[in-house]
Amino acid sequence: MNTTLSLSPGTRLALFDLDHTLLPLDSDYQWADFLAGSGHAGDPATARRRNDELMDRYNQGNLTAAESAEFMLGLLAGHRPSDLAAWHETFMRDIIRPAIQPQALALVESHLAAGDLCLIVTATNTFVTEPIARAFGIPHLIGATPEYRNGRYTGRLLGTPSFREGKIVRVEQWLTAHDLSFDQFEKTFFYSDSINDLPLLERVSDPVAANPSPALRAIAQEHGWRILDLFDHHEDQKS
Image (cartoon, rainbow, N blue to C red; front, side, top):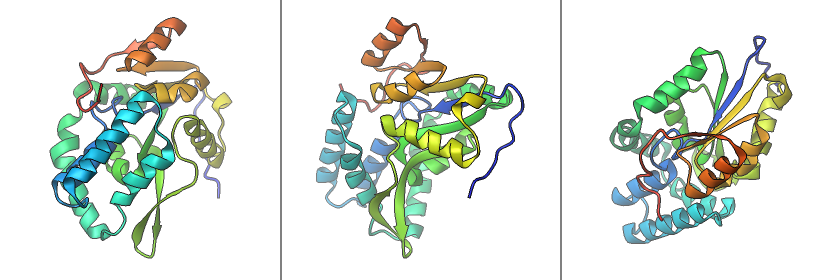
């Protein structure tokens, strides 16, 4: 069922990638590392090796959504939701909240204060990212959707992965579900650090390369896109 959002004249759409864009780390990578270090991901050495491999391939631009989901969503499967919730609160306390920077909060708050419609659009699954979106005060989230059946996560992905071109698909689906479209907004922004997000960056009216990877920085400079450096470095990004 559609849910109509009432927009004021001149409303703008502000889309934010999450990892290495609003956060100076990758929440997916850090969650897997946290579970491995806590003994909740099978053999810790094997889990960390696989996690590093996936991060390397993501940074190189040759990771598929299916490969990422198989590992990341598999970490949720088999655990009781009550345990996952308790672990995630520790993860938020120890890893995520200390990493949230004032300049990132100020960026989000500037869009919220302007009355912009704000969404996080991330390839990371919604179990990991829903509490993070709340911490930033962003009311809407598009992320990978983990299947939940009979009181447990199954380890499978539902719907289109919000990854690469899939981010455009998911944003358009979300807008349609709220009786909206890209063309209704005075301006559309998308903030991202990653070359993987090039399709959605090219779709909006105002792309912003935020803490961009070298490859994305080069493209942004070539196209005259705004470049925004919120952080000095990527804490967990592999070379």
